[in-house]
Image 1: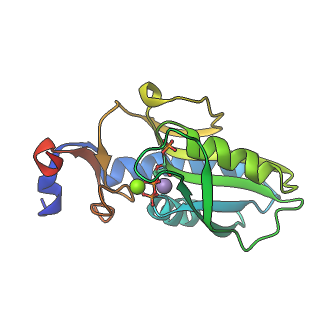
Image 2 (image 1 turned 90 degrees about the vertical axis):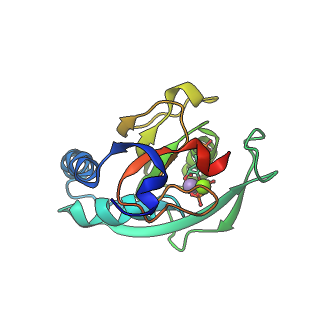
Image 3 (image 1 turned 135 degrees about the vertical axis):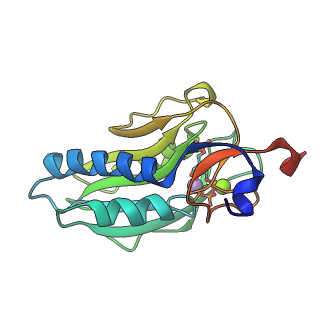
Length: 181
Ligand code: PRP
Ligand code: MN
Ligand code: MG
């Protein structure tokens, strides 16, 4: 057990469990995108770990691109208005896009991103989200590839942060209340 792992009150998913889930999603994506050369769009920064592992697990050709977005009114995410901090390099015309995300919380980020990318002429836009908090959803998002459903707790690790920390944990866990109390 590392020092930062000691700040978790519990581990939800170990690295092995995460990688097994990613592998099962990859097997399905290989079938669904056979012969298609999908463009994987990662949402910085939370999705870096899941993108790295998912992309390397895929046994079909795929390319990667990245976006950074920010909700207006930092701190709260109630508006649903999203600002692009870093846009894609790729032209989406005719591409089969898979958005790769670490977590769907309220759903506002992905709901906005889905509409935005669909408006750029992509042939298809689907979502792979490793985690989803059903109890926290304020908007419905259609997720084709879903990983784990988790309780409405503060989770960190494997890309997910609290104040930019804990992204480098291999596991995903619930942050101990003493850390943010
Ligand atoms: C987190 C997370 C998702 C988003 C989910 O990103 O990585 O991108 O929030 O929340 P929502 O469903 O309520 O929109 P964050 O904005 O914290 O940026 P980060 O990825 O850089 O941590
Ligand atoms: Mn994010
Ligand atoms: Mg964050």
